[in-house]
Image 1 (cartoon, rainbow, N blue to C red):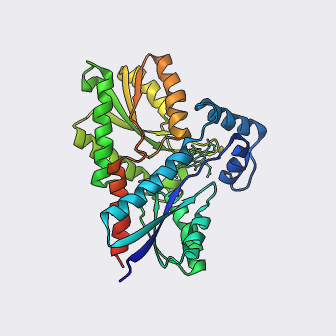
Image 2: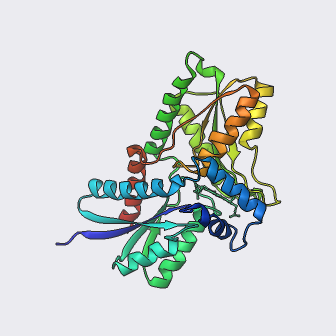
Image 3: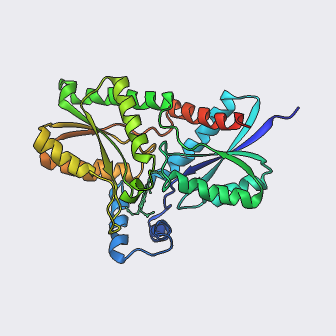
Length: 311
Ligand code: FEC
């Protein structure tokens, strides 16, 4: 008897492939509105600052998608899983991934986003695009909405906190302020009772409990400049407050809202937040990104499989 076939649409943000694609990418993020020359220069400069215009998200997403496919097939030898990439702002777009599954004769599929926390504006947006395309093509697809408390995800993040704390040498744990961060979103999501802020706090509390840390807080990062308020406090303001009011000189940032090395981590934290920290005399460290950590792949494999079992 032939094995059951499942297609897995693995969705991620997407990144340009070269500096001359930055404008088209940015225009897509801005829903078809091209950036001003100043905005384009600002973004291009940030990509240039991360090792000379390198786009690590592309390779990292390729590796994560392959690692997940390998993991799913190893965990469930009775099923044949094929992973397809679907990117939000670059090719192959989410719709391309769905189309490819249909072309390959996939009849049953699961969609998952490489971001653990659900917001209508982020994961909800990915799911809507995939669902619309799947409905058009007659493909049956279930979605993983969030996995922010999966034990293997919490274990992977907790291990990173424990390991990175050693970089503070003899400084006692109580003197290191832990700041969990995630991508900010426009404040209007609060009126929509969006689960995103609470899910992020749930992940933070669970990691704090697991690692036995009490000296922590949550901060937002990477807010857009749209002229409307975004969720705060921003990490740069958090560093100011930590330094002036709390008098901490050691900070460990753990970007729980991201799973890969990319611009928002390598620029916004490693360059911009590091600069502010240096000016304030703060020793700042960051936990390494999950990338293809087997614990993270295990968590993804689990939540994808749970959506297959539902049927
Ligand atoms: O490395 C790279 O090339 C891409 C890194 C990258 C990731 C990422 C993740 C998230 N974003 C989220 C929300 C928004 C909203 C806007 C927005 C704008 C940008 C811009 C760049 C960018 N984002 Fe992003 N985001 C990344 C990069 N993001 C570049 C445009 C310039 C700028 O503001 O810096 C505002 C536009 C809009 O209204 O749509 C909102 C969220 C995530 C985390 C979840 C996910 O991965 O999807 C939420 C990685």
